[in-house]
Image 1 (cartoon, rainbow, N blue to C red):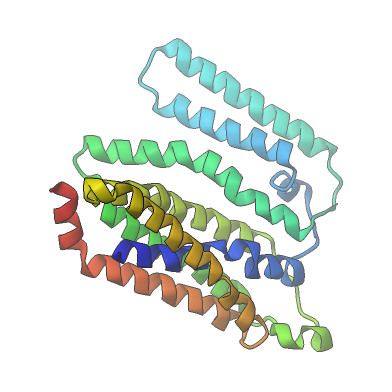
Image 2 (tube, rainbow, N blue to C red):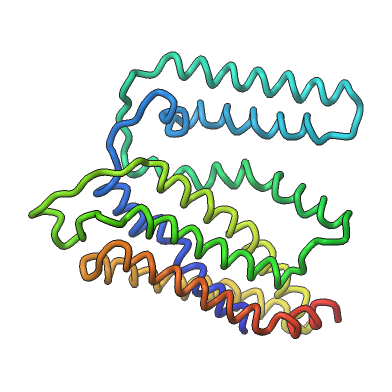
Length: 268
């Protein structure tokens, strides 16, 4: 039940990417970007960059045969060359729309999943892998940091309720990209770990019910998305993001205050 409470806060905060974070992209983010930045807004060039990074990573850490490492390296170079081909075809200024920011979470999952799994595997070999409840707690701390990025990006910007009358300066898209990247780290620490934890500690006859409880908690969190839109025109921007920082920190505090108990039942 405590994990379900954490899931509610996380879902309410994380899925602001389809609401207030999208408002921020629409009203406070520049509408055109340079050639280099457009690499990340064009889905094909971005995928080429992602594939290049993943293959380069596996080429550098692989302990398998030299031939396989060379193939990964060759594939990485080919991917970066494809990305460069797209780069040369872009204009000096390229228009972007708020909707394009929605691609980042999905693409970052593709990029980060093998890296995060590999990292935890490396910690496991050293006997230092954190427990599942601890990963969930770290996930909430990372989510709080993601919204702290938005707090910093919003200082000095015109409040939404004064936007029409006063207008506002526009910020770099990298603020939102960084937020989405950090939130994806949090999601990978929390979502797969949380459902696994629930399945492990639930009494056998209640496993299905508890997994349904996880989905119900996610639904409640999604319902509470309206907190963001409710305060959008009532608070300063940095104050709005601070609400989600506090929610994530409270959730993390709940998890860490129960850590010994949660780790004990995980091992039971």
